[in-house]
Image (cartoon, rainbow, N blue to C red; front, side, top):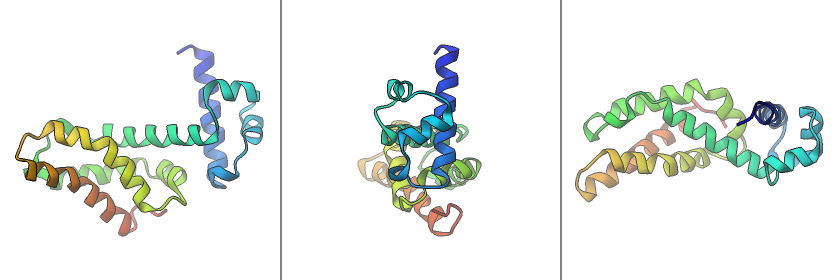
Length: 156
């Protein structure tokens, strides 16, 4: 990506985060985002369809970043799910401020659903067991996500 595109993308995302920390996406206008990012509306629309597309992309990038920050993810098996849960919790904590802003007001299950979609392929690909075992493994990280959310590590 060209440097101007990167700078514009960064300005858009920074402006969105600043606005998103104060209000929900449905209250953010392209006009105010562009004013804050010092860009034209046409520039914004050349990058994103609308505010919701920007929000969705940033949420997806955050979830991917959380999952990528889990060390040795390819080596986890059914026998060491406690390690997976601990690493997932640490990954959440390292992205906590971003998660709190992007996912605030959406409910605890929204984040878990996004994590489930991204982690499902990874979990099933890494572990070759029976169908029953695969289903347990597939659900386990999400169960831990729900528990982490309920105990207040991530406050939405």
